[in-house]
Amino acid sequence: MIQALTKRMARVHVYISGMVQGVFFRVNTQRMAVRLGIRGWVRNLRDGRVEAVFEGEKDKVDEMLRWCRIGPEGAVILSVDFTEEPYTGEFQVFQIKYQ
Image 1: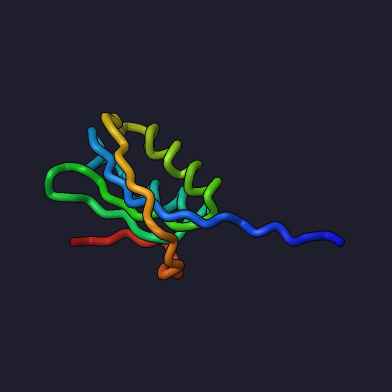
Image 2: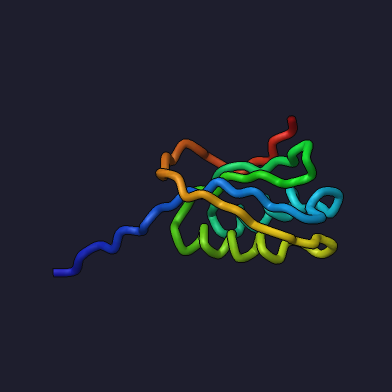
């Protein structure tokens, strides 16, 4: 009997610090998230950080976090702080939020 493999789903709330605004960080985050099948959102904060919520398959969320530690060309990442949260499945897409 073949058993179906169930994918482990994950959610993380992320804060990225450094030179992350003015370098197309949000747009590139959205592109990477869509490529990986991640849902959630990303936005700039007034204090210069970028905040995001990623939901999806655990290995894809982990890959997204690895990408955040490098970022797009021109970004200088000082820290990536994240908190694991319960997966909710509330998002249909990955979007850029504008305050």
